[in-house]
Length: 466
Ligand SMILES: [Zn+2]
Image (cartoon, rainbow, N blue to C red; front, side, top):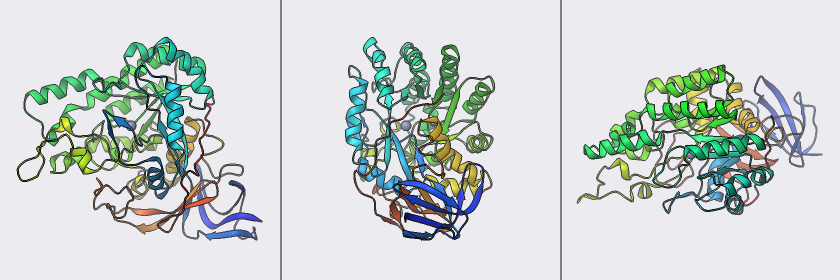
C-alpha cells in the first residue's frame, strides 16, 4: 500500500504537462501512471483541475540575518512556514560569516539554527575575506555539503564586502574544489559615490533611493565579475539580476562560452521604481532597487529565452518599525524621509509562485513548463540537489506543490503569513494559488492550514556535478 496517491492532477515537468496519478511511499515518488490504475493508499488526494508542480527550491533566502546588529523578523521555523505556504519545499540560506571568523564554523552554527525548519534546507558559504586560513577551509566547506558561495561586491561600510583580490583567490580555490561562487553585483564605488552626492545635495527622499544605485552600478559589477570568471575559468552565479543592461552582458558572456548562471527575483518582475514616489516608498527598499518598466519587461524576455534560468526570492522580512527604526520622527509622528537610513530588504518566499503565475503565465510571458524549470529543476541542478530534488519522477523526493489555477487571493498582511503588518504587493490579486504543499510525502500545507512540524526539515548535503 502506498502512503499517498495524488490523483487526476496535471503533472507539470520542464518539457511537458500530462494527466497522471502519482504514488508516494516512504517519502519518495515510487510510481507515476495514467489515472485510475493505483488502488490503495493511506490517503488519496483528488487533484482534478489542478496543476501538480515539483516543490519550489528557493536558492536565495535571508532568515534571521544580522546586519549591524539588526535582524529580520522571521526565525527559521516561521520562515519555513511562509515558504511552505508559497509551495517552497527547499530553501537555501547563507552562513553568517564575519571577518576574523572561520567560515566552516559559521556554516556549522547556521546549520544548528536551521534545524528549526519545516522544509529542507542547505547553506551557501559567505566569504567576506580570503586569507590563507579561509582559503584552506574551502575544501572542507565543499566536503561538508556547501559547494556554493556568496560574495558581496558592495556594503563595504557594513564589513560584508569582499575585496577584489580576495574574490580572485576564492575563485581560484572554488574552481579547484568544484565549487561555484555567487555574487551580489553592485559597484561599491559607484553606490558610495552616488549616495554621498545625493546626501550632500540634501536629496534624501524615497525617490532618491534608486538614483543612489542606478543601473550602471549593477552593469559595472556584472561586467567585472564576468571578466574575472573568464580569466579564472571559474563558473559563477549572479544573484538578483535587476537590469536589462546587465542581462545583455550575461547573454553575451554565455554566448562566448563563459559559465554564468543568473537569477532574478519576483519583485523585479512585478513592481517598478514608480513606487518610490509614494509615501510608503521606503517599504520597497531593497538592493538592487526596483527598476523601470523597460527593465521589468526585459527580465521577462530573459527568462523566456533562457538567459536568466532561476528565480530566487531574496526574502528578508522586516516590519515597518524595523525599516524605520533609524529615521527621525516629525512632531505628528510621521517619519522624516532619509533613504540612507532605511533598513533594506523585502519578503517574497510566500507570494513568489502566485506572482509568477499571474504576471508570467497568465500574461503569456512564460509557460508552466518554464516556470517549473526556473523554480525547481534549474535550482536543483545548479545547486547540487539533482536528482534528489527538482522534478516529479520516480525515485525523487516527494516534494510537490498543487496549484489551483482558478483560485484568486488578494495579497495583504492578512492573506500572507509574515505577520509584518503590510505587503509591498498590497491590493494585487494573483489568479493561480498554491493549495497544497508536500515535502518528502508529508503534507505541510492544506487548504490554508499549516500542518508541518517544526524541525522536520533536513539538511541537504549538496555536491555540484560538472
Ligand atoms: Zn540577498
